[in-house]
Length: 375
Image (spheres, rainbow, N blue to C red):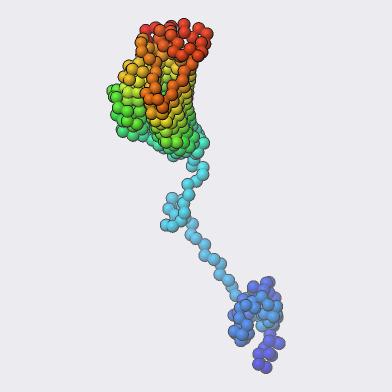
């Protein structure tokens, strides 16, 4: 102990820059092994160790620098296990779809993948492969050509040309077409759709089935659709089928359906300023469905059930200020006592008002002129 004390007393002083450096000296100093084993590293920053390290004058320890990763080539793939995320700047608020290749993409599926939620896909003139589903809020805006022809989205398989399963979708100035039996031009089973200046078409022979998959436009479940200035024609069976959804149809035309023009076994329908023509069974409701019809024109129809408007199984219809071009017979019929049809200001082709609760001006004379040649 005497020798250790003398060594401590006469050891040269050293200038240190920090307690960390002092402690590094203490740990590597042979003469201080006894102190290190007695007190341990828990007293690392004690002033006693700092002072003693100065007195010992032990050489500072050179701390190695942490290794650095070698430079990686830009085309080198990340190591396995590293999380790679899609760069935010890959998604675009505005995507141009052009079949000629002069836009951002050439296919509808690629455009939907590239556009961000809430973005716009501008579709230039051309024909595009359908069978596509969408589940995020997007605007699809067609750009007609110089003669006004709209871009066409079509499906040549049994899949719908366009399917909406979620989000808020806006369709503008487009044509949708299905060409195979039991396919839909538009299928909505979730989310909401707002369609303006659209033609929905089934391009094939007419049928007669009432299967839900046979409609040109099919809305089901929680789907919500708002159609304005649209044309729904050439349905394989129904032109428009509503199976539990909510639909608004205004300033539009429904025509050339091989089966029922508008079939509503469940759900809700509101129509205003709509023409239904050249169809079998223009309007048929079943179940707990409800319909409100205003300013409707029905003409050139093949009345399979002998009634332009037919309500059954607890369904209900309210109709006003409409014209039904009917040479004889009844304009509508509730199929059972639980179904209800109420009417105000509705005329048939002979100009005879069906319900006398309202007489709107010269509406009768207008009805006669409208229905000339359309019995």
